[in-house]
Image (cartoon, rainbow, N blue to C red; front, top):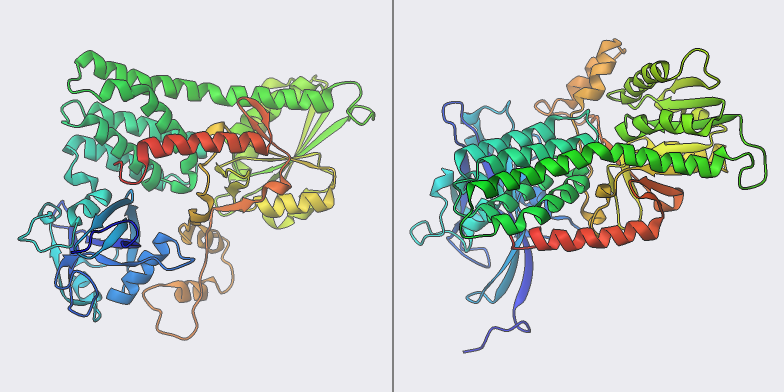
Length: 532
């Protein structure tokens, strides 16, 4: 009998895709499990989710969608992506395999009639049959006849099984709030995430494994809330976990200790409220160093006008611009703001800046504001003769690349062409910095096309109803289709950026990389493969 070693075991990376349906008559969902046929290579006649290997140059979620379509014919027309679970690894000596499992949860769309879900699933040769199961029925017990670690794979996406009802409801509410908030920036969303985490902790007092459950909740808030803005959430949550680890990782936790745990989160929330002020001070220092002296660095006279281009509605930028302008004593601020479709956040920010200016600067002030709102399409016009482009940050990669509101890259490229001496500055706390090697797995966040279409409908654009009919996912039975995409974020390469304004001053790419390494260490400690 041969001994299983690292040399003769085959390591496979696979996805496990759990498909849910929610009935109007029951509170809990049902989960589809499939009996594998005798034509598959492993675990014949065992019950499990849709599964398959991850191909080269394919992300886990791309593999999940491919496997679902191949094995059930279901597509994004019928299913919504719901959750993904923390990957884990185990070795099965019986088949000579080491498996790394990426669990995903999908659910039938709300408009899909529950009783029609059965007929929508058409299995292929890989399965003999399938059936719906209650979540509590999915166990790693022989009578079920499931594939190895079936229950663990399932619990990675469906935390409701292991978490008490009140904590589970608090976590569900937090995830829903994060998913549905498309107006708040990353800083505000991270505060929402921390408050939601606190609500979960309040309900863990009688939990038998509060430290494990707290880390599980934190992982889901990071990954299944708004992952596109998740870097800040990750940093905030690991910071809180750092401070509460010694309290929660005990056999007995007193009532006073629970109060101490909650005070940890309260402290982090309070510290977050101070962060915009610290970033604003960093920007004031930057402007004073470059624009406020009687001679600027190249020996020319101090400018009479400071011209800034920005977009979207970064609260950090909004809170910094006027305070920093006042600190320079430059007579005139020309502020160009792109409207930022489809939600027109730029227009909202322009309004709030005007209100703030009128409050802080009297009519007799020696400083004046000239604000211009530009359409997104006129980014090149808006970029002429600008001194600075200010960008918010939703995520900063370890190499310094920036993920921010769509429209950021055209604005920067336009400014670099129209104003060759322009400086492009990124505003954001160090919490926006992601761990190394996460950029390649950062999926584009596709949002509701209706947000784009609604403005067309409101303006009674000619022919828009024809587009609507072609975009209807339930009537695609023609050789002519149309698609409206609503992607919120895009990447701006680090080579186009001149500095990162954060709470510790202005950093360069080396400073960003150092922070990213520290993020990796904490993410591995609390959420590394197999930890929760």
